[in-house]
Image (cartoon, rainbow, N blue to C red; front, side, top):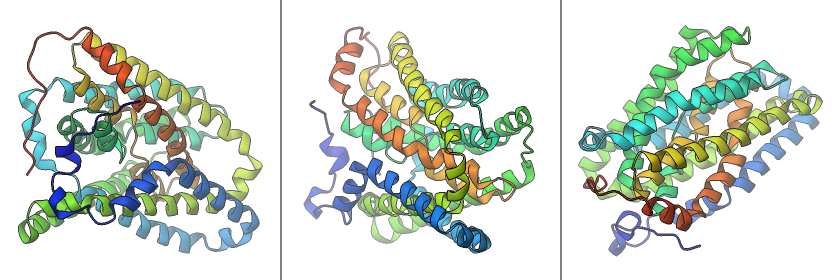
Length: 362
């Protein structure tokens, strides 16, 4: 398969040499499936072998997890350029579709899939939680590799982060009621502020300081390192989650099978619906790829952080977000490999119209 990479987007400062940490970041992203599998398996095995230690270390693990959560979310927020959001309204259709897929279509699909999941209600609630947080850390990268619109992907991802704190309490409250699980809205709101709002604000301030102190190129060159920190801390947190509940999951491993099935069904459905509907609504290939990757990929790191930081939630609520990377990577890479076919599919019905949104990078 021939993929298209935008030189201006991925190497805008080539004369400065490769960004620090770029090679290592690409390595972890390319092999994320295996690293996530190793983190799950290793944590699970240690949790089984050291069940008594995992129980005794519970309070300390909770404290360490909260520290890891901050280290995972803060770098992601530094790389988030909120200044691009107002500019997208020049051509709002892709952004509006992305918000529709993320906060209308996805909750509906996830609700019916969660209702069909037998077994642990906590796993069903966790599945619904991760479905509500769009924009995987690799969404913009996949968009660029497919030759999609990086500007639309970036703005759609930023917009998703802004809407998610408002949507999460509403949706989780009602899905919790259907499972007779009390979702403490006050605690959830506090967690959202701690995990999303404060890191977003701190990241914005840090980004402004870096740009003012070292120039606009600094943040772009630092993105590989920022992404690497997020990936590594996410893997550590996945291992800790499975360690904390290793013994319980060993006795109830069958409860994971409905979660696996629901995740696979969701990825197939959302990608198929978006591909058909975007073409029907006249999006071009570049716009569609940006919308597709941002809307189908979920931000597992943020979902894990929220699940871990809400003290009223069982650690089982974090399991779906910890397992989703395995399937997400497979499906999104598979969709990337369909890039040539998708380009022909969208170009075959291309209507005259405005060119895709282009936003000058700072």
